[in-house]
Length: 329
Figure 1 (cartoon, one colour):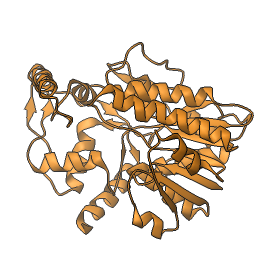
Figure 2 (cartoon, helix red, strand yellow):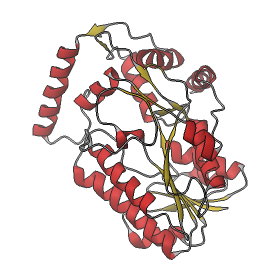
Figure 3 (cartoon, rainbow, N blue to C red):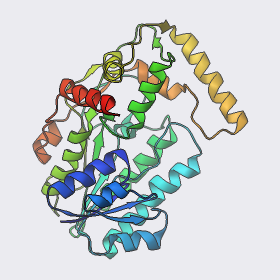
């Protein structure tokens, strides 16, 4: 395999690249920054932007498989920035893949593409895209996923993976944010909500991409399809957060605020940020509040059946590894 990994310098993209190298694949990383560690492991590292058609075409040259993990992630920002990276960037990559005769294209999507608001419990891939999205990230990732699946053909086999809340040791923004806010005493439980959520340990998320590539080919059962990926072990939201805090050496979150007060604060913060034209994300948004107070877990039977996916790291073992990583820093 000669694989191109977009976003190879990121948390999940880096884990995919490292796993591919360990499996004996040739790896070319395409990212906006420089990542000497990845180069030291044996990857060819190209620097560029997926919105640059010429750079993307050059990155695809000579490859047979694309792992498209690059994206603009976040719950705040301008629509045009999300659209430019997530939609136009994906379209550029698909065009370049076709021009270069690439036969496999694995897209890193997200369960947010089907999230309609409210509780999502045990949904499978038959769930439709919602009529509207609560974030620019979710909306543009859905558009990108549609492009990828529609591009499936006898020449280019495509698939989309939807790992949920990927976490683990390393440069994980979600873990870093939880740990920092927890240590600063800035986290509060929302009322009595503690609903079940899915998570995905980083090594299993990367392994799912490798397994998808092994199964993917024109006409394969997984071609042209999307798959939910997780540990298959939904846990109460605040239980997971408190396990992360324990691994980080921080105290658990016990203080609460009423839902109405949290909602009012989130709405007010959003208004202030918009008026100020701030590009940074507010400390709390209504989207994040919704995520903290609703269930969101998924049926991964299709990934088990079609990709041979089976989570290898339990949440308990993952937390031990996360704790060891924090202690080593």
